[in-house]
Length: 351
Ligand SMILES: *Cc1c(COP(=O)(O)O)cnc(C)c1O
Image (cartoon, rainbow, N blue to C red; front, side):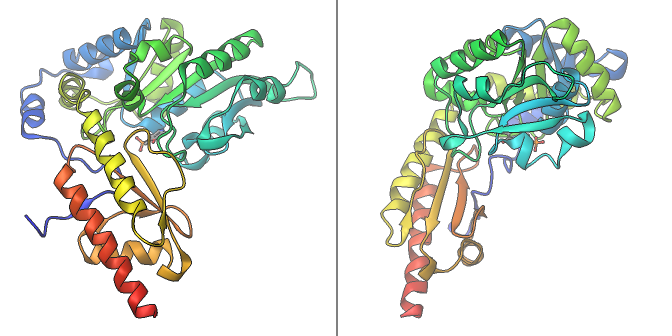
């Protein structure tokens, strides 16, 4: 298996395991648009329970989960407060503007986190002249922030400030599972501070597709309606929901292995001359920077691809490598060695 590709581009590249495929093959299904799919219903109840919410809605993607939650809790002309590095701003094709007609006012702070003072200063008082502040979005773990985990006390402060100002809160919990695996906190410990919570099964949990939004019954009724409007109402979706249930049962604990692999990868890469690690590595994501003399991030990724290691350039000199279900500790050791060889070769050639 020495020539096996090591795919570190994202934790979305995982393929369903044999046991997960069996669960999918054996899933009881029905027409979920008619409310008849028992496996989808089971997943939605399970997620609602895990999050400590009244209800949950199964949707095809994390983007739809976030956008249906935003659409359900705002009206056109409203304003959403979110960090400038958030997924809803950077990787969802301008959807808050296109689908909900809302403006986004950006918070700032290291690793994609912000605090209550920013909610207070970015919130606008009610006035016929101003957008209406409606919703605060928190992302945990924070993707562009290196998989950063929000300290629970900071979540509490932000939530208290937002609720005090009459704002609602949405948690983009695509990788909330990673935050929980790392801290030992339960999803509901975080979720209690939010009106709506999205979570993904297609990242580290290893399902082929699927996300859920959870919240109170009235808000989930709106999410359900907007899911249909956005084209996300599926029929025998129990085939997918079965994979998600399997992931909840079998792949949450093992996220700690991904975190250990990421820490090892960061340590190994950081020891290579010309490589630096710009952010802490608390979960499964490693960002590393290469010195200009070694080439651009895109060039380094191209050279790594030729050696069987896939990673994503996310800045002129910055590369992202993500650990997941299909990456073993041995593959991490091999990847560290290959990055070292590729960069040493380049350095020698450049003289
Ligand atoms: C991946 C991700 C999403 C959802 O992405 P989809 O590709 O639409 O499933 C949302 N938020 C964060 C932070 C993510 O990393």
